[in-house]
Image 1 (cartoon, helix red, strand yellow):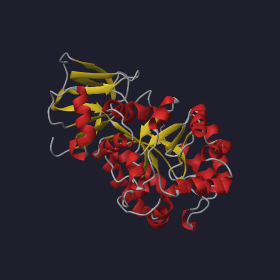
Image 2: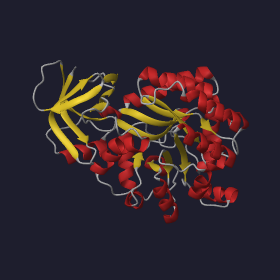
Image 3: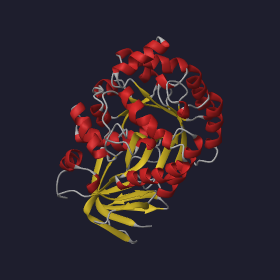
Image 4: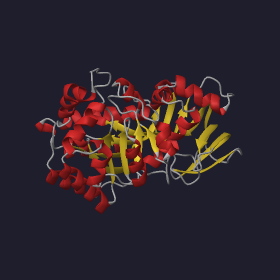
Length: 400
């Protein structure tokens, strides 16, 4: 039962913040307590650093890890030119294994302990990706990326095969450390039959769904042309909007669509770095939060160029003037709510799993707000000294 001595900063369930110089005590992979009193157990000294809850990435693409920073003029052109050719490579199991290992190590190195992941385009490589996630130790919520229209033939999956894959994967994942997520690329790449069958399966098996919504105007117009409805109405008519659905982006949602998403209690993954990279626009975070919609932060690799979430928080501020406290709340406890893991992750409260990150800062005597501000505006992977999941180290910097 080790205790980690450091300055410990965490949000609580009520969204208040706790900042303590003391000891984080872990027992059997769970947080026992935070205390100022020195415990009679092994002490691991992180006095020169701070400890925060592990970062939660609410939206990221595993098969795009190698194409970050590849510029294009629009989302649809970028998909055709870079994304689809790279994702085809992941049909090769050796390529999938090598780059899945690279991907999950990258998350650990950047302080990410939990992630909602768009996986490879076939079930075999998705299984390999889950194996690598387990080996590295990342808490992973992922699925085969389902597509059956308007994409290269190599990437298409039939509805029948998709249903078989969904059911086969669910049975051998533990739920807390790894869970299968029904993953629809987006409405332009999915038939109504695919969306409805995915929604039916999610309802029957109580599974999460993830997809994209209203990222760029060109994409939105394509959805209207294909289905004759707004983006949110298309998903709702298929049964895709549920309390366990995570929608990436939501940049150009109408007030009516926002209201519909709030009514269904679906979640939003805010990906500001990606939105800036593709010039998609700024997600109206205040309007969404006013409606009580849960929001998390996503890197959206590869349109998002950063695997580290701190530069993404900086871009979230440039997109909307949110405070550092709000930003880190969305990144940790907020992200856990979006993923549906807030009962055991996202904060450093007693009974939660021991998921935390050790961070270097310039001056440990700074106020809470100053620390969060410095990390938000200056932080990156160089600040990450160690990453823990279930109380076990999954990454340790050479500088520690």
